[in-house]
Length: 439
Image (cartoon, rainbow, N blue to C red):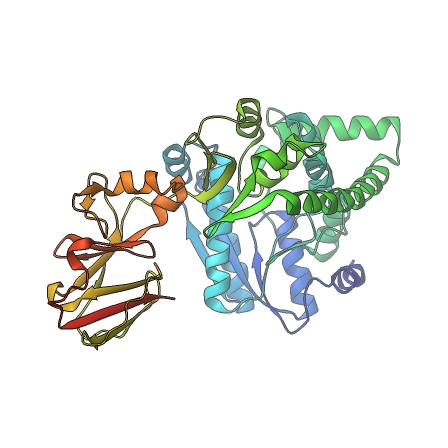
C-alpha cells in the first residue's frame, strides 16, 4: 500500500515531499491509516483534530486518542472543540453542514497562519462511490455525478487510490489504533444505507460493480470538462461587470440555446441552490430591484442585468481624514493636494473633487451614505435626497451600496467619484483649493 500511496501522490501531483502538510485526523480508521502512511513516508506534517461534541464520551475519547498518538510521536497538534448544535441552530442549517463549515473554515485558518501548503483528508474510493449515490438521490447535474477531486485548491485527498477493505487490511497488518464511530453501522442514516444496502446489493448483481462505477465516474469527469468549457464560452458572450461585481445581460442570456443551464452554472458558483435558481428563471425578466439570496451572495435584477454581490455586512466602517493627509488608502485610494485658488484651472472629471478648503472642517469623514440624507448637487439651488440622486443617475442597487461619501461636519461634501456638493464649490472668494483624486 505504501508504494501505491507514493505513486498516487506523484502521478496526481498532489504535493512535493518538501511541502508542509496539515493532516486532518478524526481518530477513525481512515485518518489513522493516512497518518501512518505519512509517518512512514517521513513527510513534513502537523495534525489537526475537530471535536464537534456530538457523541458525548465517544467524542472525548476520539480526541484523547489523537492527543496520545501525537504526544508519542512529538507531532504538532491543533485541537478545537466546537458548539456544533448551537452553530447549526443559529445558522438554520443541518448539523452535518454546520460541522463541515466549522471544520474547513478552521482548517484553512490554521493552514494559512502556520505555513502549511495543503490540508490532507482521508477520503477514499468508497466515500467517492457513496457520494455519487447521495447526490443521485438528491437530484444533481453532471458535477454531482463526478464526485470530489483528489486535489481542490489547498485540499488534497491522498487516499483516493484505496478502498475501505484495503484500508482495513492495512490497519490490521500495521496494528494501527483507531476509534470506531458506532453511528457508521446505523442504517437510519442515508449514507450508511447506501454503504450497507445499496452498494453490496449492486455488487451481488455484478462483482465488478465498484470498479465499473469508478471508470464511469472518470468518464463523466472528462465529459464534464467538455461541458464546462462550452459553458465558459457561452458565459463570455453574456458577461459584464457592474462596477466590481459580476453581471450578465438578460437579453443576451435568452439568445443562448440553453439559457437555464448557463444561468444555473453561473449562479451556482456563488452558492445559489437549484430551487432559488429555478424560481428566478421562472420569474424572468422580473422586476428591477427583486433580490434572490444564497448564504453568501445576493442576486439583484437591474433592468437588463442580473448582478451578483456579496451579502453586505451589518457594520458600516468610518474612516477619518486628518488635515495635512496626502493620501488615503482605505476604503479607497485618494490622492489629496492643496493649491492656491489664484489661477487654478477647474477639473471636470467626476473622479476629481475640487473643493473650497476654507469651507471644510477636519477631520473629514468617509463612510457609506444613509437613507434620508440630503445634499445640494453642484449647480443646483435646492437640496436632493441622495437616494433620489442615485435614481436619477440610474444607479443599480449594488452601485448604490458601494458608494462612499466624503463628509465635512456631517454635511455631504462629495459623493466620491460622482458629484460634489454645491456648498463646497470653488467661488471667487476661495483662497485655497483642496483637490482629491480618486485612483
